[in-house]
Image 1 (cartoon, rainbow, N blue to C red):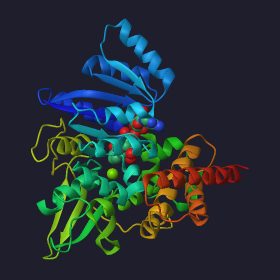
Image 2 (spheres, helix red, strand yellow):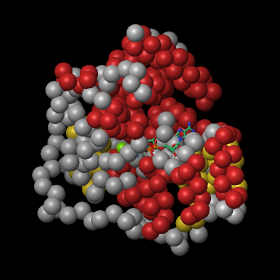
Image 3 (spheres, rainbow, N blue to C red):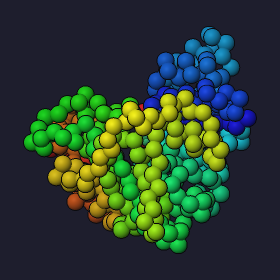
Image 4 (cartoon, rainbow, N blue to C red):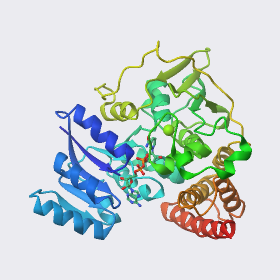
Length: 398
Ligand code: NAD
Ligand code: MG
């Protein structure tokens, strides 16, 4: 049986991963589950999947979990803190690690799994956005196997030739006859809203994604299309693509999950229901296929598929991310950190929806750091950007 550690087990991707395991109980066993602080959900998961370890980032939550597991005679060992998260990502009995912590917090545990040479099922796009070149170099050095779970990147991966699939980060798209990656996105809930009305939208409206059910942070990122910007950066690193090789296409129905265009005029698309269990199951079983519990796509129910060009006046965050991508890693790390702070401030009512792009732009404009050449330098840039973002948020608020 394949041993799996899930980083971020209590989140949207974590729960979908467990749903795929329920479909394939003879194939996978859970070695460790981790979460930030949700004791109730973690307790339920431990009782069902009986992992060797459960890790809570938060000490108080870990103590509460340990006490409840003990009273229910569950043998799962409870650990806490960032070091423990990194430790269970690198356990000998773990073959695969689902990297599904949200945000920069996922970087060190995901890197721990990379350094231990595991198969990494990568959902935590922010880790790659921050550390791009360094991350891919570590994957190569350790012999870890990287499989993209983000639905677009999983779709692109599926539409790529084997030579690309087996050499992520270092592949030569031109030599493989690839002319373009067509990165699709729905455009989020405000695709057809008046731009003038966006300043007043609420967190609940921003989180009501038309096609996908996801965690709060990525839902807001989808509404600003920062998510597509982060995915643009993610695609650059995974597929070793340059500016001319990635194009963002708005596709409101989310049936096509992304496409690859070849020099002979062919376009290969991956399609399916908008359900993350499909890319998760693909990454878990690659190169085989397993049931994911997803209903088959019904072409007669589907209706029309449409495509639009992104409008940067509606989606300024998308433009900021594409520009940062071409500027370098200091810029992408700064933007990612500012955006995490700005989204949090929006969700807690401190700033408005359109202030997210304003905060991100201001922090990027004020950036003075040079290119990082190691992970510690990246972490410092992330911390500095958070301080700048907080100051900018305070100014917007008052
Ligand atoms: P979520 O908010 O639903 O879950 C996040 C998980 O991370 C939870 O288990 C939480 O306990 C844990 N976590 C949060 N902060 C933490 C911290 N500081 N330290 C340790 N653990 C922490 O998020 P999600 O929607 O499942 O997204 C997870 C990642 O996957 C994100 O990077 C997101 O961009 C990516 N992703 C998600 C989807 C989706 O459909 N939800 C699709 C593609 C990519
Ligand atoms: Mg995606």
